[in-house]
Length: 619
Image (cartoon, rainbow, N blue to C red; front, top):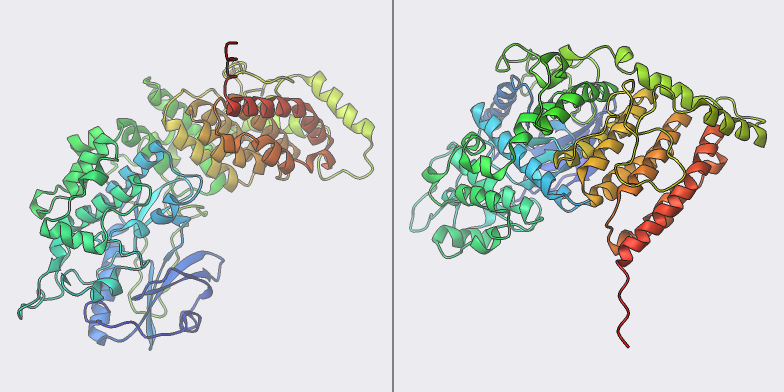
């Protein structure tokens, strides 16, 4: 399994091979790897996993050695508090094949770079910092990856990064004059891109053999591959090296400088230092984060504020993530604004244990090659599940009932006037009564930025100041680049939330973050689709809050590309076309109330795309 294999893997049916793996069902094929065949599978409890199949052609002792290495990697990572690494979680051996199983995630980095909506500059910096942190975590555990590339960095929908598919079974050294081994083990996508350190290529001509196997991959080799991956991220998917260019770079006849010049200055210096030909001249991954190069490349708030905030929600289930985020949001906003808060208001930004270096409780690792040792799969990093280990930051969280008390009161007020459960036989008079009742009640104690907008196109920042009693997340957020990352987070939390209280809270927090991010592309391509989708969900309260959020969001947009000028006419209004026939009169009233605002927003976007009128030429 690995270094001894020199030819193409025998053809076999993946679905047939996966029939030997108990507890999973084949669903689809992933990628086109020559060495390992990857498939998307479903476990018996409905969880999505990736199963990699290796048809056994090597000696049994060699296969068992690599199984033990993979199991030791999994054990080494179990003590990491907030992991950026994702080892193989199950190893199973049958008579014909070896199966490696891990969690399936939203996308890998190569896919995310080329998928709309495209990453913003802040998102690239945030992801890049996590790439380095993932490699640093791996090296701190005594594990070198061996095949770092964009396809092996996995992302959740809220851009938490995991380094996966550690490859101790792949050769460390490759012949420089024969691309066959490189194509078999490393060119999985057929693009001939190369992220292999130049010292891994060895001249084997004139009777000189490769170094004795199995050699050990070094951290310096991983750092070079990390530099290539960072370059691909900031070059929008363009690989820095192809196979031929990497060999030319090894020989000193290719200069990647012109490509590096297109990157941000701080990141350019960081990547250039990682790509030095001399392995001894490269620093360690953690040294890049802590040193001068890392401080110039990445804002301090990414590591000091945003990373602990995101990490606190890593193992929580969806609705609890909303509660955790709301509990910590005041401290996050205060730190982003340069203020400080008393310790009792910091929520989960402080480590959940007295010493953050103390290892977390871990389950017993599964034994390799044992058919009966499935063991439970770890919680899905994208959508957590109940009862899975210790949850970071949970000790500082008040009970969900107390935390969302204001949300419940507002939800009850919004639901007043009709719901989907009692809709038959309603007449137009019910709609009028609901409208009159809504006007008579007024804003109430739970009103906030998500309160009903007046029938005009509001200007940015003219929303009333929120009263003291309101649900968390509705307070105005400070303008800061980090709000882009928070906006993406709230979009994910809104999609994953199940309880109506959690959805309402996420809606208001998303509205606040979108208003403060200062990026119209983020508002139109991230926040707007999330709000439009929420307007089609069940529950009159959620629909009403989403409608008001759409109006308020469009009012914030000031510059829009010509291609998005008709977003209201071609996307928003058709998506809301079923709301006039909604069974809840409160939703019908709310929809009628925002139509004028949507019309004004559509006019404003068209005028913005057209630009200022040209002055008439003199006669």
